[in-house]
Length: 292
View 1 (cartoon, rainbow, N blue to C red):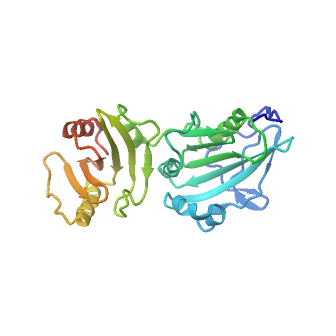
View 2 (tube, helix red, strand yellow):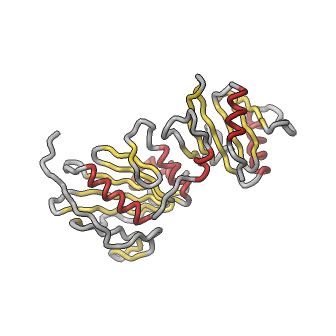
View 3 (spheres, rainbow, N blue to C red):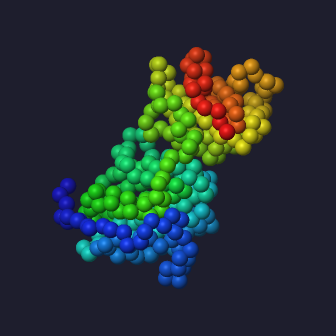
């Protein structure tokens, strides 16, 4: 499709990077103040949304955001001299894990990923990415012609403005690299595998040695915390939980998810779903460092 407008912007920061830039007054309302961009004006045409009224903006999708400890949504629109509008939505969550979690529920491994923040992807009229406790959506208004490179420039400014040196949640570094399907990592805060007693698991999909399976890692507050979680799982299956296992392996027969193998390791749990190769399972579990 031929673009009728060539949108060339010289973009520069007027404000320095200011992590967690909240509590400023704009138009009489306490909100995050977005960074200035040369050649564009900023309009604040939306209220600041919190958990009480997020439904008014994203309807039923708000339940998913709330499960990841959503705190607030700030929105601004950047408008250039030709009337092209780019909306920026900044969802703030309680922790970086929460922001990564909701972001991971809305992306697919086959998207076009770009280097922005902790992770992000881009399409013709949008850039979505996560950085620190923020999930950011940058969207060109329908009917306008924009250049994706310019959206990326705006995304970079917004990202640097919020978090200077973003890094992935540390648990992600524990996943073995061999065989891991790129961009399959995710964080599930509640109702893991459909069970309300399972929470806060990082997960990733693997394809190795002719095996397709999911690896799960839970970082608990203590060993006791993990054992309590396992006990609830065994209660659900109506099978007795082993009093103590020789190698920290607990096998749970879930009628809906199949057999799940858990290794208790320090203050965390390592779980495997769909992997019945004992040798491969043991080798991967041993390669993961002690969870503290």
